[in-house]
Image 1: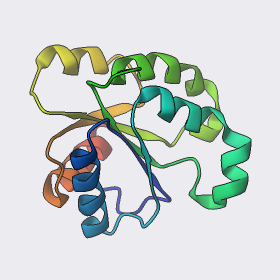
Image 2 (image 1 turned 30 degrees about the horizontal axis):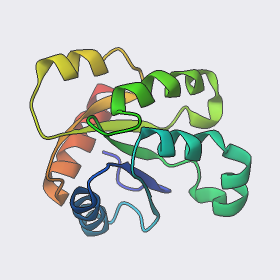
Image 3 (image 1 turned 45 degrees about the vertical axis):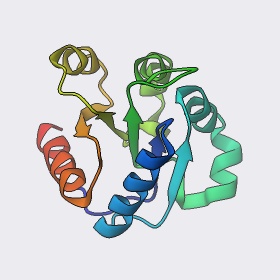
Length: 143
């Protein structure tokens, strides 16, 4: 199981869901370094600016884990994944694991997400320490 992360990026437009994810991450002890984005576009901008962020955050960048909400304004989770796909060939991002955040159990969403190699699983909202750990165990088992 993934027991420690250099940092985690939480991408969710809902402030309450971001806060619950923050508490779950803190309770899990995975990392103290948590970044937040309100939508996929903001997260993509954060990911794309590698040199600036590597300089600012050093070993804590890029994040080891991205918790990515599916339904967001501006750029939803699947639009983010489509754009993020270009990083798959960049070795600096090879170890990044993405877990999709969802409030439903849609098989369509799971099937759609499975075509992206960075996506390693789903995490049902609200995020708590137990379902975060379970999703990470499943992600590592399928890797």
